[in-house]
Length: 267
Length: 233
Image (cartoon, rainbow over all chains, first blue to last red; front, top):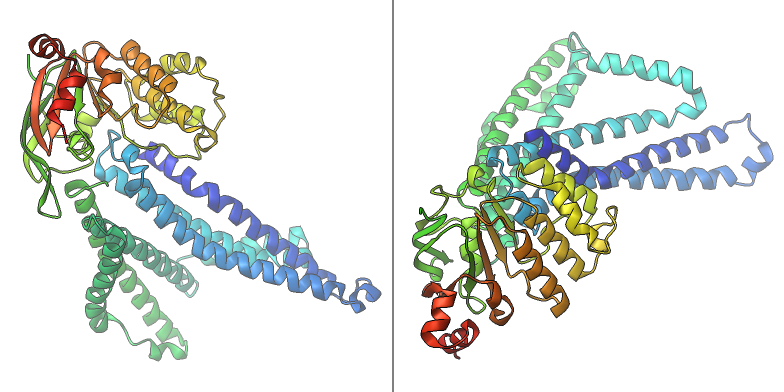
């Protein structure tokens, strides 16, 4: 049943995010073409007339707007469409009356969030490199991008740091999403004002969350100069940070599960 | 016969003081169409939502087939809420798939047969349908399940008389005869002809529970008439 739930969650979130991702990649390519057009080998007279400058400005703005939209809408769609509307809106009458356990319902939401976070990060990353494709040509670009992906995915030696940074950011993103899930679930207990309840819960959780962070956080100022030793230390800090975030995310999961399973009150 | 639905001292309070259900004791058997009747705010929807697991009781308990509402009971309970509850971006075809994916007792061919009577395309989205058509589609999906219990919350509220007739015809011609059908409404006159038993809810308490035919024989009045007397303002 988890697979079926996930299928519907992915479709619900993807119907907005997939076209947005496609638009971002398209905008990156367009931007790449306008920048290639500005190179000296192209028509000098057209360049002098400012045609490519205008095109470059427009495509750069378009690309910037879209990349900001991808970051914001990925979180909005995961939280609002994927969680709030699906469980606490009118659709909750369907989702919470399906013959599945609360654990399956919630795990589907978490996996859906994880999948879209990874996809959004990958698409954004890919879009940076698509900008240069028109200038270098497809085959050269594909070779370079493949090498880059190999470097990033390696977990040993110095390149392992990139992987650890990505892991840290991914777990931190998931932790934030689960924090909002927990806040919405806690807020739903205040049936008269669930929105205000969710906001207050979020503020309350943030305060509680910040207390141990003061003691656990490493001092990052030491990492200003990235020597081999400090890189290794930074790598260790990232792993510890990821584990702490995962543990905190698990607490948020437990709170959300409890509120949905034991205190559900759909209005 | 063991009751399919049983409430024991069922109480639901909101904000710790307003009792939507106040120590309700109720037993309903299979094979009947029961009218859960009462004015707005009498606790009808709260009782149904508690039975389908969308609300937790504040006190007492509610049992469906002897079990507390949960994953097992949900597999045997068909529920039609009092609002549009299906994703508006989904098409009829996708909704049929969804019901088939999650409910083993969903009879797709029966649903398709019922849909043939409607002027409805399978690739039409919910949000492109009129209110009456959405109500019909939601009812068809609910009644196409061969469930043990059907909870239909205000199925005829807010629709025109022609749609009302369609909905009532669909209910009586498609429910599983071994099942319990609970219809909540305040539009008594429309549903009275199909009811076997009536339960009056007043301020969260059971004001009356009786066989519909016996009630009419005893009082010499229609259920609708008795309802108007009990709930006279």
